Image (cartoon, rainbow, N blue to C red):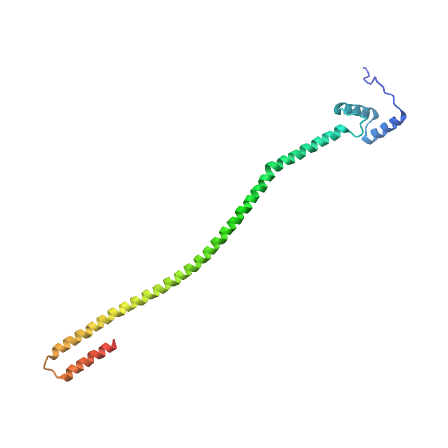
Amino acid sequence: MEDINTKSVRYPVATDIKLEKIALKLGRTKKTTVIQMVEYFYRSKKDPLDLNDELLKKELVNGNNRIIGFFKTQEKDFLLPIFSDTGTLVTITKQHTLYIKDIGKYMAQDLENTKKLAEGMTALQRGIARTQTHLEDKALLKLRFSKILEYYITQRESLGWTTANVKKEELQAHVRQSLENL
């Protein structure tokens, strides 16, 4: 079997100490740490001399710009229409509040008018009842008067022309008394 580890790298002792600390910290061997570092720099295309990591900064700025752009788009598409619609709703609500107050005033006034109308209807019913009573009393009076008149007529006829004035006066007094009793 052939050994794939045929290459070697020579570096100073100070670098070896740093490499050993990194490997211990990561819990790997120095060989594995070197292989992973090479893979990292190869894939990320970063320059190990660039301590400020300009590519990372650019990516962060681009990411921040994308996030800010997303927020601005969301604000324009959603928040601004909601705020403008909310303003419209507040205006409509104020108008509706005025309408509702006017309706409340109208209903209070209508309640007063209804009470007055009910009182008028009650007074009218009482007046109709009184009129009905008067009509009944009038009919009864007519009936009684008619009986008195009939009595007077029959008694006068029975007295004849020759009857004394005393009896005629008695009859007239009786009829007058009957009328008074009505």
